[in-house]
Image (tube, rainbow, N blue to C red; front, side):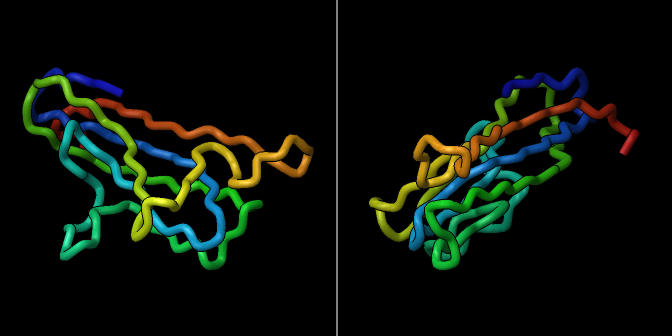
Length: 129
C-alpha cells in the first residue's frame, strides 16, 4: 500500500496482520518493508534476516494456521510517496513452503479455514505522538 505524507514531520502508523500455514519442518519469517528498507525489525547479523516474526515448523503440522501481527510508528522524514508491504521468507531450504491465508492442508472440508492478511497505514500529524 502506498501513502504520501503531507509533512516531513508526520509519521506513518503501519498495522500488519498475516495468516499462514506451513507443513511440519518448514522454517521462515516475516518482515515489513518501506520501499526497499526493512522496518519494525531487528538488525541482520550473519545469515539471520531482519524479521518481525520467525517460525520453526517442528511443532506445526499441515492443519495449523497461525496469525502474526505488528504495529509500528514509522518516521520517513519526507513528503515522498512510500510503499509499505509485508515480505515473507522461508529459510534453509528452497523446498520449504508457506501458504498465505490458509493451512498447508487445504482439502475441501469443514475442518479447514481461510483467513485474511492485511496491511493498513495511517498518517499521524507531527507532534501528536
